Length: 210
Image 1 (cartoon, helix red, strand yellow):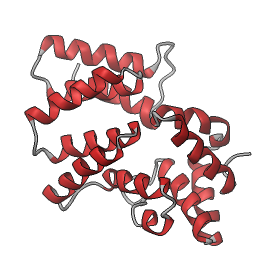
Image 2: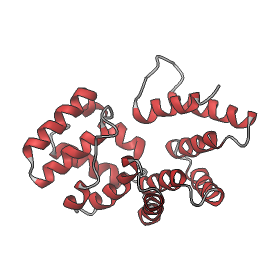
Image 3: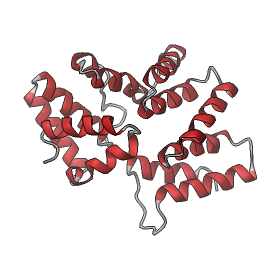
C-alpha cells in the first residue's frame, strides 16, 4: 500500500496526477490512510494525512485534536510544526499558526518555501502587501498554480504591471480554467468565509477572474 494515500491527498489538494476515478480523491485518501493505520498504528505519515483530511472534510474538532496530539508527540519536529502552523493559519488561528511556523523555520534554516505561506497570509489579510511580497516564491513549486496567483495579486497591489502579466500568464498556463474554479479552490483551503472572499476579490482585481 505504501504511501498511496499521500498521492490521493495531493491529487485533491494540489490537483497533481488527477485520476479518472469515480471515487473522489479525498475519499480515497481517507480510506487508504485509515487502512494503513489499522495495519500499523505507529505509521506517523498516515496519521499526518488523516489530520489534513479532517481539515479538508471540515471536521474541525478532530483536526484540532490531531494537531495537539501530533505536537505533544513531536514538539520540535520542523515538519510537524510547519504543517500544523500553516493549517492553523488557514483555519483562522493565525497567531497560533504563525508561532508554530516561526519555530519550525528557526529549527530548520533550510525550511521549504511553502511554510512561508503562513507569513504571507498574515500580512496579506492586513493589507501589508510589501511585507507579504517577501514570502511568495515559485522556485520550489514551479508546476503549482497557487504561487503564481499570489504573485499576481501582490504585483497588482504594488503596481508592478509587467510582473502581474507574467504571473497571470504562468497561472493560466498551469490552470487554464482557474477563473471557473477559483471559488472552489478558495473554499478548499480557507476555513473562514471572509478569507475566501478577500482572496476572490483580489483575484478579480488582478484580472484572474471575472
